[in-house]
Image (tube, rainbow, N blue to C red; front, side, top):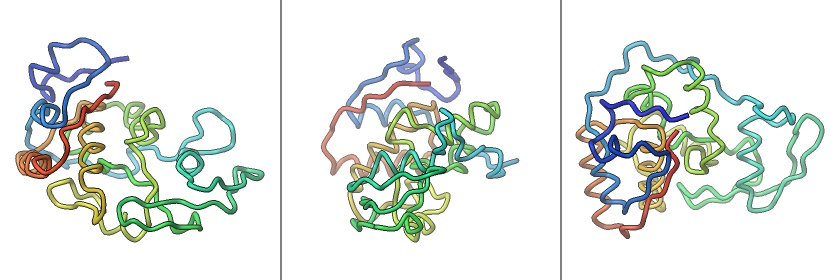
Length: 206
């Protein structure tokens, strides 16, 4: 299903009634619409987190941990995970305990709400919060780093490591979910992109 909310898309995106999008990073940033953000009515529990969509006993958090592990953990009864190692690209640190890893929404839930998700159905918010179909939506990172990020957008927070990767993934998520940006956010994207490789952003719009 394609949901293309016109107010959140530039003409370049509105003109293409297809699910696929592929453009260089700087073009992709230019294609993001600028809109005033509104946090009215936001509550975190309006995004139903960590569901077990395929009924295999592993919820979304578990699925991300399994898929992103540098060294695969053992998966026990009830999807209990033991062993394993995870690399947090935000700070360049590897962790060996799942309790030290948070699953971060690259575009935070509150930021998504501000930039379009406040108008979504509960089902669409749940799909966003548990998006396993694009690896860029959710990422495992050191818990303290994720907590320092909190609900800040890209103009307010950047990781210490791999900022160009973070920018690419942030832009991809915004496009995938037809989310707008505010003016400060877009300016920060443009400034950062000037020092990054202008690599292609390819994404399926949902």
